[in-house]
Image (tube, rainbow, N blue to C red):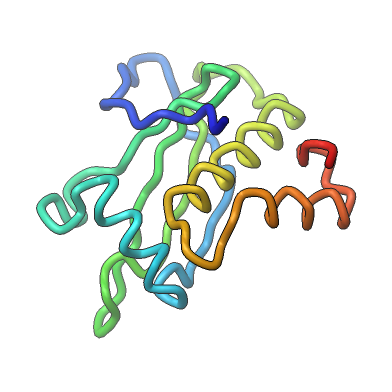
Length: 133
C-alpha cells in the first residue's frame, strides 16, 4: 500500500520549505509528465501553484513544477519538505518519505514501471529506506 495522499495547500505560517529532491528531466519519460499533469491538474493550473502531498510521516511536501521554453510542461519537479521554520529535517524521516513519494509516483504512472521493481532495485543498492524483499 502506498501511503501518500494529495492534499491542499498547507498553512505556511511559521514554516519553511526545505529542499529534498530535484528531477530536471521529467519530460524524458512522457508517462511521468502525464501523471503530474493528471494528478495536479497542471493542464488547467500551469505554473500558478505547486502540488502538495502528505507522506507517511505526516509531513507535507511541496512539488514545484518547472517549465522550460520549447519543452512540454512540466519538464522538471523540485520537492521540498514543509517544516517548522527553525527545525532541522530529520534525514531518516526525509529518506523514508521520499521513498514513499517515489513509490507513489511510480504506482501512479504504471505501465512498464512497477513499485515492486523499484523496491527490488532499492534493496539491491542497499537504500536504507527501501523495504525488505
